[in-house]
Length: 440
Ligand code: ADP
Ligand code: ASP
Ligand code: MG
Image (tube, rainbow, N blue to C red):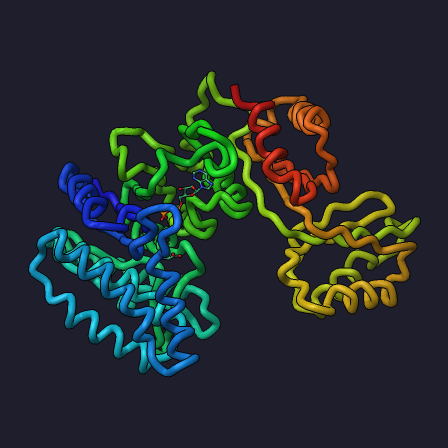
């Protein structure tokens, strides 16, 4: 039995958390490969090490040295090493890291050092070999993971290792530069390692007792999801359930390795099992919906033209205008005479929105284009929806009762997900209304 364990930022935040990690590892000899994040927040308004490291990079660019921000990094790591009582010359390692950040002048390199230092400390504390992610995780020149090369490297390097501690979040490109995944990317590293060592289980240790039905910062005490499929997690993570990075499913999916989300601070809790469809065990207590997630700040371009459906190439022409502005489309719900193009508002930098709308007007001669801003998208996800009728009715009745105006509806043909658009100001109210309508 081989388990890969990834520990997130709160599990690395201070010496007490790291002691807790050690007791988890020591309690199960199959926990052989340990992937760690950079120290995260110790309390509500604390700053994550990764954020301070991005600040270090900005400081190097602004004034040639990261001395001011790096002092914060130094203090955190020196304190952790002292509190853990490990025999490690952390000051020399920190001196070298500070010099490298100043010399290399790269945001990715700087940000990666949180995971690097974290892994050095944990490896010394556990007495387990350190394997640098730069050796085994490879990106191409566009910053995309090179899956084949990485798979080979991970499995050949770790085949020689009984146990190892590996930093999450980063790797190297073929030119030798350190690059990172997007934020929260240590989850992806854990998944890649699990695939590479053919793990039986990928344990993802965090600060909540599993994947919850919705974000606990929006709904009070949401229920834990006992079991969920890869596909449902993809939908929820992509739509904002930040407990697991949306790209962390793909590597383990190839070998059908289940993921167990666990709480470092309540290791006795079962957490959530994330499994492929064919490993899902239906339960009489399963709710129709599995989870709810959402993201704020979208813009909807509602394009109306009568007889649009009979105009060959209409959608293609709209999309080629959007593509011309290098904008990704999030959703594309359509009616007989209407097409809504939903995009993240952050992509519409100053002036772009006006130009985009004008170009759509010129190219497809619509009856009108209506711009709706400050929209939140909320996804209600559940494989149970396909089997049971009335889910949409329950959802829309709940929103009507809560006086929430629905601006857009999009249901994928997989019947796994109903996405609605509401005003940003209704975001929290909407998630709470859906939760209360479905979860007893
Ligand atoms: P880590 O540093 O361990 O990777 P993250 O902060 O990335 O932890 O993810 C855990 C956090 O995700 C939780 O503390 C919670 O606030 C947030 N979160 C958002 N949506 C969900 C959800 N559906 N279930 C659980 N946690 C969620
Ligand atoms: N430390 C990185 C971040 O804060 C990666 C991670 O925690 O997964 O985004
Ligand atoms: Mg995370």
